Image (cartoon, rainbow, N blue to C red; front, side, top):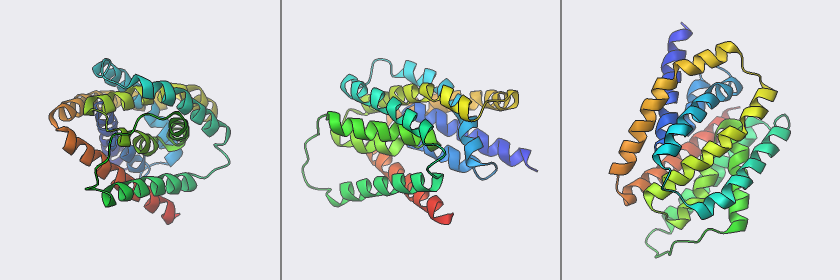
Length: 247
């Protein structure tokens, strides 16, 4: 009875992770909540990390020539710092608090963007101080629950990068974040052989998802792509707030 729902939900989670690495960064955040219905959130986070890393290799190869170097120079060191902070404070802050904070920030950003729609806005440049703040927060929340997408999107969306450049920047950034989480995760919750075997069984779904994500990203026009990203951010933010409020 336990195995079947786990296998179905884990396969969907792997597919979503792959799609995010293919260029749809908002969808992977549903993977942990899905698996949390059949296992503890902590175990779900640990189980999914190998899938994120394996999918990262495919995503980085797909977008190896399309990314914002100026943003990555700011966001990568900031996010690695955020991972370190998450490691040091993992036992001090509850998952519910983190979910509520990130959900509230994402929701506020979406509402502000939509309420100001119609006003002409020039693309904003990459700013170091903002990038350091949102980058470190992305690393921190990614460490806690693989929920680094909203902080990244809040910082990068106002820049109105070309679609492929936005996707490539997200893919490369989170590849670096996920690699930096290997040692802390192993320290906090060592991987067993069973954990690695479960993750290995889901690799084909993750690969398939990456190809689907890249296919869809290249065929959606820029305007609809950003509408989907913002809608995904809004839905995930509401889900995070709901999850936090239930406990």
